[in-house]
Length: 296
Ligand code: CAA
Image (cartoon, rainbow, N blue to C red; front, side, top):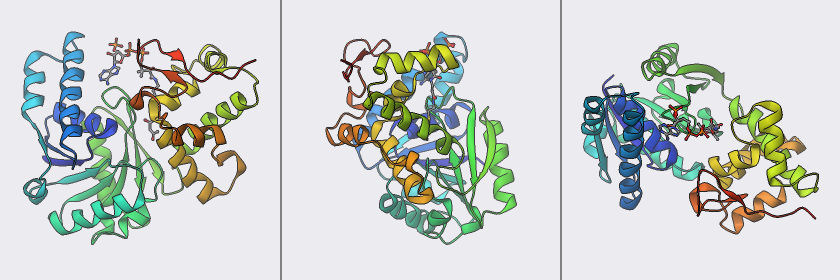
């Protein structure tokens, strides 16, 4: 496996492109939005420089990694030679359908088709393609360059050969691949999102404020970020769409998105990426101030 195409240059897409390039793969990162691609290129360079400054990689590897990356709005030629294509577009089934239909048309039949979806069914995505045995979930975690997990999702038709290749690939990327079957939210988000939703409900019922809830989970449970800061970090729109998939699929009340989350997304408060969520990220993004005030 040598040539990778990553589709979608948002937070996850740029992190995924980064780790593949750093581990020696040729990567074409593609997005319809040129500005998004420019931002991704700048972010990858900054993150590689950060790793170089911490002496986790040397300057040669930094330069070689950047040389292995192409940023393009015209991926057709890269699809032709791809060994693996991986989509990291928005969590929207219609958008993913278009991408997977293109994968079928434009890549060689030997090419594996992966999705970084955080909750959408791999079986549904496989149905949009001409090779269900080669469709697999490769779910990375933010920040991709440092989080060691890849959740590997097996659809009903995913072949053992595909799973073995993807598991070995995760190892090659310096990550641990953990296998999950196709079910709403897989393992990670089925367990994580109810906690975030419950933290929002706890806030809504004035049990404590944003800082208090996050401090309890950081200091009491050893979480690196409290659930409300983590929600901002993931993106409140992403949290909402994952909860919608979970609620739709599992019909349990604790997956029903809390109204505060829905209102914040409708107001455009999406967390870190929009500059404001439960916290405001405009002044010092590393030490954000609480933006959502509820407590009497
Ligand atoms: N690229 C490269 N390195 C990075 C990085 C990036 N994007 N972001 C952080 N780092 C490195 C830093 O350089 C630092 O390295 P050293 O340990 O060598 O100093 C290290 O990571 C820690 O970073 P910071 O010192 O800047 O900050 P921190 O200690 O507060 O850690 C954090 C930041 C790693 C993000 C930590 O807060 C954390 O682990 N948070 C939880 C993240 C999490 O849960 N992610 C999963 C979200 S769920 C998801 O992504 C999937 C989904 O489907 C929703």
